[in-house]
Amino acid sequence: MSQNASQESTSAPESTSANTASERILVLDFGSQYAQLIARRVREQNVYCEIVRHDITPEKIKEHAPVGLILSGGPSSVYESDSPKCHPGIFGLDIPVLGICYGMQLVCENLGGKVGSTNTREYGRATCEVDTDSELFQGFPKQAEVWMSHGDQVQSVSEDFVALAHTDTCPVAAVKHNRLPVFGLQFHPEVTHTPEGSVLLRNFLYNVCNCTGTWKLSDFADEAIKRIREQVGDSRVICGLSGGVDSSVVAALLYKAIGSQLSCILVDNGLLRKDESKWVVKQFSEHFKTDLHVCDGRERFLSNLAGVTDPQKKRKVIGNEFIECFKAEAESIDDARFLAQGTLYPDVIESGAAKDGPAATIKLHHNVGGLPEQLGFELIEPLRDLFKDEVRRLGLELGLPEQLVWRHPFPGPGLAVRCLGEVTEDKLVVLREADAIVIDEVQKADLYRSTSQLFAVLLPVQSVGVMGDARTYENALVIRCVDTDDFMTADWSRLPYDLLANMSTRIINEVSGVNRVCYDISSKPPATIEWE
Ligand code: XMP
Image (tube, rainbow, N blue to C red; front, side, top):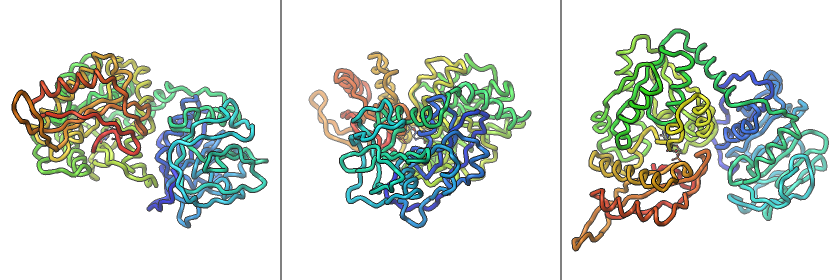
């Protein structure tokens, strides 16, 4: 995203994956929230993709031997003196380049073009009209919806460029260089709000970079297993198990890589869903033949959360307690040197935890930013480059059962970030029961698989109601249900009214302490999926 914002750091993370794929694309990261989304869209087209620093030198690029480069968006403005720049030599490598948003502005600035700020920021849906045929727009509709997010735009291009498309407010929405294999898109082809965006990325990969598309997700599993073996040697790894798909996939990868050198720890922090701990133990014993330790941290989590109302502070407290529980439990496990976590890319990017990354911090995800500095373990995070749906596909490839693989995600800080204000056991009881009802109802309506995440949020707000003939003054509860495929953007689910009515009636009748149920109709952005 480009929005004229200044930033503290201009470095981007080095890629964490050393993949031996023969055909690869490099994404140069200028601080976009979407850099990994671009990488994942490329992988979806069966081409391996890595993210590298924006200022990578031409020599370093040659070492990676990529078939194409994609310049990501970013929060800066190209005409700010401290904005992240690419090495100008990258355009002389004869490697195809696609600049997206800020990336396109860099392309034009480097190769002759004028970038300026617009009077109106363009943010949201726009209609793109294609003006000139090109290999990039092959098979793309003449008019299509696209997602814009910028304050600056290319105002004019030199005669070395051809403008390929425009929108109402953006006269140069796409460009192609006349001599070099260099293209630019002002809008974001990688987000789902650009429904035909994958056509453009595919065209870049297959028409411009001449990819053949031989990379598959199972290559990722093989590589990850190999790397885990090299990293771990004959030490022991402990893996935090939560019952969610991420930690289960990490456990499955580790189990394949190192078998009985794996010990799993489930921390029952009292912030889990109803009967969750029992469910996880049952699933685990059915699928893994290695040891599981259950740490009962219910009391200590709750006492440390007493009086805490700030969402970021809740995450910190929970992150710290998690590690303390792990450490205590790990003392009973000989040789525990590594800690494996199911951190996914959205956790990394939204925590602003990508090493020296220029992207903005949205939330402090407990399994990334909340970790105490002195961890005491070396971290293994094999899913750090992946998105949820990629992890699910990986889980199926690794033989995990569908019932587990398709579970809705549950955040590490659990019900604490759905219990707004101070977290108390009384509130948690209400929330657990309401949560169980909404999930039960959506399963009965056979909509669990077609929705991405569903849960209840308890508000610290009371309102007046009437039950029987009596006045009530109880809490309001919100049902949140979203559809998304990457959890970076999401839309609220259009659940049938009758289903919402069943949920509401059951919650008010069966859960004491709630007299009003609301449905959250905000999408992400601008809201986030969780309320805290
Ligand atoms: P947001 O609320 O940021 O959530 O739109 C995106 C996805 O991430 C989950 N989430 C978390 N997961 N630790 C986690 O492991 C966290 O601290 C955390 N916060 C949000 C959220 O449930 C959604 O699936």
